[in-house]
Image (cartoon, rainbow, N blue to C red):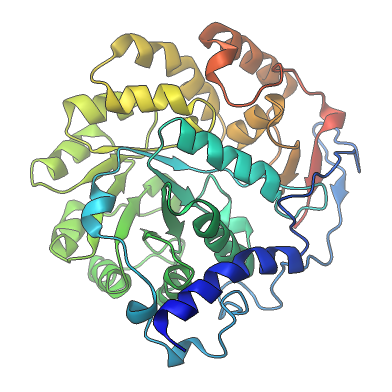
Length: 390
């Protein structure tokens, strides 16, 4: 089979596989309540079997039926996948860490996901992170994770750059997942440093050099989640790698300027700092959570020069979104805007009622017309949320 034929067949399988696993993006699903949520204790909906659930734990080999290949080891992916230039990734200014919405049974709501993706594209986002922290990749099986990357590429890959979060605390697993991601067409990978177990600085360099060999890569530094900072000495050691696109940096603007002074491409990982990061400290742009909600305003903040008035206007929203660990605030906000179902995968739960009221006031202050969706923003009550344990 020729390389072009294999690529075509792989692309065409995206919708077939989605349908096989119960995801029909063309079919509307009527929302109905399956259970009640009571604060502070939740009525958890058991979820003993999901068609997308892998029979293997996430740190084992991912199922490869998405591509219809008998053995990944038999193929040279550099020959069958058309890679995106690292230069193209380095130029992205607004990258949205896209939310993954759910159906009442806990599976992906691809209809709502596609709508969110469309809104990002028409409002100026240039890239998306699929299955990142915001997209709850850590709550997915690798089957789900790779399927969602492939679906995004298949449906939107010609209009926006798709960056798959294929990082792991296991180098072996990170390499395998990244191979899978590039096989289904993602344009770049996002890689975090090994978390929990952590490693030495020498180990960090070796880990990143190993995954960088596979294609365009953004390194993600967020010590508050991993428990370990990626210091400049590590970034300096890998910065000359031809696949190194840049760093999503969450430590702050002094660190960002240290890198940009050396010519290293940086995206701010903090929405509340991104305006200054972009226009005062040399960052190329932002990987944004807030752009899920107000993509047009975030685009304006990144593209149209210094705008301290707009930045100040958005600051209450930034603060509201991150008062609890992301994506709790975002999930609550999108549900109240009516663009996703109010379904949470545990361990995430919605913000308390008083905070939900506060969000409505923030929307009214900024202007409902700037937010995604067409429904009036509303305060959802406890019983309207559904929690699933899978």
